Image (tube, helix red, strand yellow):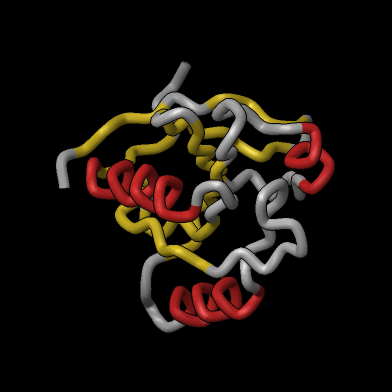
Length: 133
């Protein structure tokens, strides 16, 4: 498997902290960076009706990230969310809501973070390199 993404240790720490903070609800947010390197995990409000079982990233956070990228800021490389009582794998609901946009999804569960590519044929686990931040 070819290295598809690199992630800083600070991003991993943020993801684990956000999942712990939000439990028993799902946390969610954006993965930002450049050239395949995720350098920031930006928390966003979970605006889903049932936050204990679903996530929906606040549309204003997405809008702001796209606007920032157009102005020369970091690009939107993907998204993250937690499964407080599950596994770090895409759920049936995740698969139903996937867009096939080829962005990365980080899923946090059980003190572990796994990364998935949202491709046209569904989710595929990504090979991720770790960088010190």
